[in-house]
Image (spheres, rainbow, N blue to C red):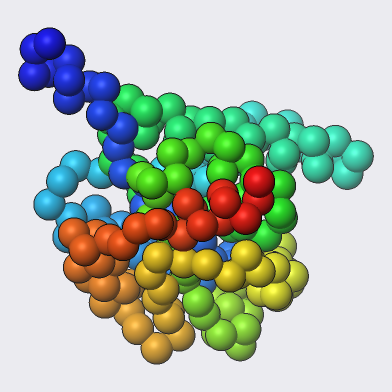
Amino acid sequence: MPEAEAEAEAGGLIVFLNGASSSGKSSIARELLLTLDDAYFHLPVDAFHAMRSRREATPEELPGVLRRTWRGFHRAVAGMAAGGDNVVVDHVLSEPWRLRDRLALFPARDVVLVGVHCSLAELRGRERERGDRPAGLAARQFGLVHAHGRYDVECGMTEASAAECARRIRDFLPRRTFPTAFERLAAVSR
């Protein structure tokens, strides 16, 4: 088999940044793209929301629209990785089905699950400064987003900068341990 075909068959690595809204996931992802040696794509869920038409969904429609968007996003990430691309993802595991869906789609050995932590007071302040999130979103997610409890590496965005967190993740990648957090979570969910 030619080398190019063999390379295309290899799956890419998924660096999954999980944290509450406004915790700094996108900032870490941008820094990661600057510091990682290999080529990576940043796939933020917010980009998928931005691609949707601007027609306002009714309150009855909105949960279905959001769920379909998130399911499609999960499959787009899986597709990029299956194509051999390395991906940095930022998303919020604030609902149990999101984790289950990803466990079914992502090759667990190829996922580095990163916990992005931030104090509730800091999240509230960042949310107010941003002004582009529903009020109280971060607080609603705060107790849910890390409920699964397992990570390969964790970062504290209350006390560290996005660049420091990116370096911590970068330094972790060549010395990943197995089973991965996703492998352990998959074993528990069976």
